[in-house]
Image (cartoon, rainbow, N blue to C red):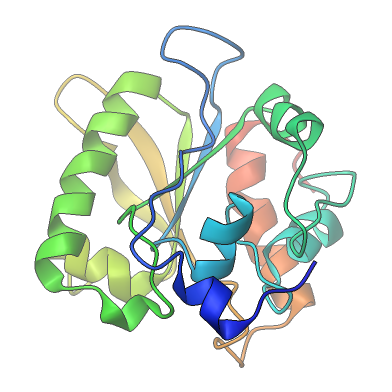
Length: 199
């Protein structure tokens, strides 16, 4: 599948659903992966982290977090979605509207997205939350001191806190990361969540 620029632009500001089961149903979410916001290709295919140049699914596969390929070009199938949920993997975004680039988002949108993420964590109570994008995390939560890796304070509310990791954005625009480096980094929160054994 391919899209013209005009076709992709028609998905600007579209909202895609989270990859999460209905609250209280389905297998528990062990690892909640949080993107910044959907790209236009993601909106067109209704597949998180979808774009031919995005390294997200190849990195998960290389890191052993998943053991089958997910189509990031044509979009995942219903079987793919169920496979991820059955493994305990859920996905959401800080901001739900689609843009061509994450830098099109406002600080207010990111802060509101941080509040929504806290509500999602409280509802689903994942063991681990992995936010893919340190700059967006710092803006959303007003935490300029955050560094990549596991965060000491976790994330959540007074009722529940999950372990929090900040991992690199897998976009092809993040040129200094490779599939191999992303695979090593993404495996760490998956191990913490109990999805894969500790290496």
